Image 1 (cartoon, rainbow, N blue to C red):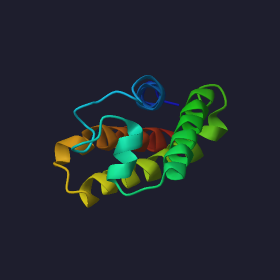
Image 2: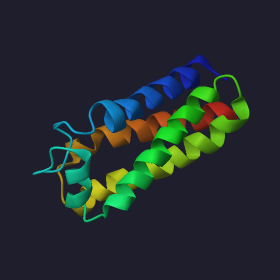
Image 3: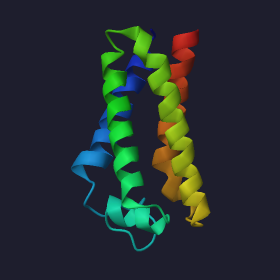
Length: 123
């Protein structure tokens, strides 16, 4: 495992915890217009509350697996690949509601970091 991939794993995990635990009920400049929390964000995207719970639980689980992957490398590739899928979905949600692309910047950053981790695992 490269140092860059390992650092990327930690950054992804911390980013997910920041969004889904620490800032879930706070406004950020990256939420769609009119959304001041994750619940309102998912409503803006037209998604039901169960989807928010499923997405959040899955992303937090994947973040945990990326940390575990620092000592158990076998879990890293699938966790990073699934995280990339979720980040692609997040970008698509922003596009769907016609957000300015800057609002998708965190998801795009996480997608790129996930790709770095994937490349680090297969190289």
